[in-house]
Structure formats: structure tokens, C-alpha cells
Image 1 (spheres, rainbow, N blue to C red):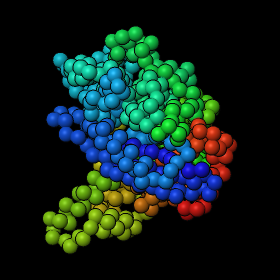
Image 2 (cartoon, one colour; image 1 turned 90 degrees about the vertical axis):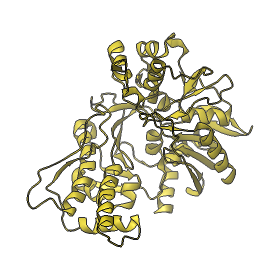
Image 3 (tube, rainbow, N blue to C red; image 1 turned 120 degrees about the vertical axis):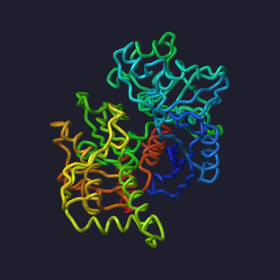
Image 4 (tube, rainbow, N blue to C red; image 1 turned 135 degrees about the vertical axis):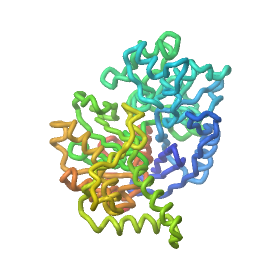
Length: 451
């Protein structure tokens, strides 16, 4: 009764083993997932063959599982040959070729001109469209897929032409209400009939067997997996994750999504309304680097990065609320990748270290709170925030700011990888190891066990 969740993250590849009857994580392990050098200033690539090797190595170390499910980074793509083996790098969600000028116009702008659809940079269909325009599609490629679907196919021997809706949506131009991808976009991007596109898998569908005996479900998106693996009461709790980026997710049976947010499919009837930022904890890290460089230039005896983070938390305690107005859009937004951050309302008195620290934390949380305001009545039933991510887990300043902005209880999740736990539970349901309605009781035991 051990379910394995595999998380192919941007920074690490990890495997988490969940004991279903005991309700606890019994094993976890990870390996680094490094960037490849592609000699393209706009690229961010990783090696899918190395990722697969890391997954297999971790599975070899983990206890034998009764089910497997993959989650992790989404949006990016890789190309594969007739044998289903990768023949290109993984062009990740951080790859910016979609906004690279090609004969005076970006692929993003051209796609919008041809289809009236503005696709965010890094989405799989836009990346392929840019590669077609640049002549960068490998000659031996017969198709492309996301890294999660690719790893699932390699473990289970399943089809590369089927995908769970939570992964299918991340390629772009997907409508979660009709469970279809816009045919105009597909024809323009693929240059072929839209009938060649990936088929949606059913909820909790079985993809194949690992080593001939362990059921593997179709891979699932990390946003949905993180919600599934941490939020016990979807109708009364929203999910906020602050790691490298930031994200707020609200479950609702309504498909009436604010235009500033994204409507995403979920595992049960209903949808996630998601607002995503590009700089969450990353904005705080930028300030950390600045402070570290000043200390180094002044010859201060700083022994570790952790010491600098401790210094920042101590300094921030000097004030309760900042008067500096900081925007943390240092890497743009999903709708406007060219917008940048700012510091405003600087006076003779407030341009201080405590103000900069508190102001940066507030800026990260304010971006998420703006989405809450956009949700309006949809948010009215929420009574608490389930908070995950390294920034919340390691730094009380983010929890404090969330409570101040949202004026409600913030419940941090006591274990590290909610997405891997959610994937493990999804795989267990897919394999018939437990019914869907048992998910809450397993989570309750896990939270008590790891608190």
C-alpha cells in the first residue's frame, strides 16, 4: 500500500513514497535537474534523457510501490522519434523563444495575428510554433510532448498521443469546459489537420505498467497535484504556493473565471481558478543577493547564506508594515513579459533595510491578493488558506503578510512536496488502491504525522 509520486521539477527531480494505510511519507529522495547550455540567449533547456535516468535511479532507491504517478513542471516540450525516444532538449516553461523576433515579428505576435489567441511565453504550442518558424524542429522528430507525459510513456510504455486534461491544458489554447484545444490554433501551429493532436485521457485513467506489474496513471499537472495533495476542504480553503514563483488556486464548480486568471481542469467535477506570478520567493532572493553583495563589499564576516536570511528576518522585525510601495514583477507577468518591478513612495526616512525587506514580502503577497479581489463572490466561501512552498515554510514573514492581507487563518503544510503527495494519491486512486473519498482521511493523518 505504498504509492509513489514523481515530481520532475525545474530544479530537482524527486520521488516521494506515501504509505496509504499509515498516512505518512515513508521515503523521499531527489537529484538535481540542471540547465543545458544551448548557445541561444533566449533558451532554457534541460536534458530529458538525464531526467529519465534520474527518475529510474530514484525509483531503484525507493521502496517498491503499488502505484506510480508523475507530476512536475509543465508547459515546456521536447521532440521524440518513432521509437518514442527524445531527440531534442526539453525546452522548459522558462524558454523565451516565443518572444524572440523572427523576420521582425515574434512567434507570439504572429500566432495572435493569425488566430486572435495570445498565448503566454513558454507554453508548448507556442514553443513548437517558434521552432517551426526558426527551422529548429529536429529532422527525425515525429511529434512533441511535455516532459511529464514523456516520462510516463517511458515508464509505462503508454501512448504519447494521450494526456490527462491537467497536462493537456498546459500546451495552450485549451478549453477546460469543453475539454478541447482550439482548432484554429492547432492548424496554425501544427501546419496539419487538428485531428493529429493529443487525445484527452479520462479522470484517474490507467496509462500502463512499470516493469510489467506496477500501475502507472497518466501524469498530472503540478498545480492540480499540489492542491489535491494538501487541501482537505476544497470548498472552504484556497491554496497559495510561494516558491520561486507564486500561485493562488481556488476550487469552484463555476467556470466563470476572472479574465486576469486562468481556468484549469481538476480531477473532480469543477475547476481551479488560478492566478500565477513569475516572481514569488525569487523577488526575495534578489534582495538577498543585493544585501549579500553589500556585506561582502564591506568586509562583513558572513559565514553562510542562512546567516544573511536570518539577518533579514531580524531587521524586518523593526517595523510591522512598510510604507515603501514595491512591485515584485521583476520578471514580468504572464500577460506582459516585458513589464518590470519598481520601488515607489521613497521618502527621506523610509529608504531603509527593514522597509525594503517588508516591502518586498508585501509586494509578493499583494500580487496574489489582487487575484483574490478579482475573484469577488467566488472567494466568499473561503475560510482559510492552505499555504505551501519554500518561502512560506522557511520564512514567517510571508505567513505574516498572508494573514494581514487576506485577514484569515493561514495553515502551512508541514511536508515539503505537496505536488508529489498529490500525484501519489492520484496514482493510488487510478490503480484502485483507495477510493476518491478516502483522500481526506489520508491527508488528515499525514498532516498530523508530519506536524
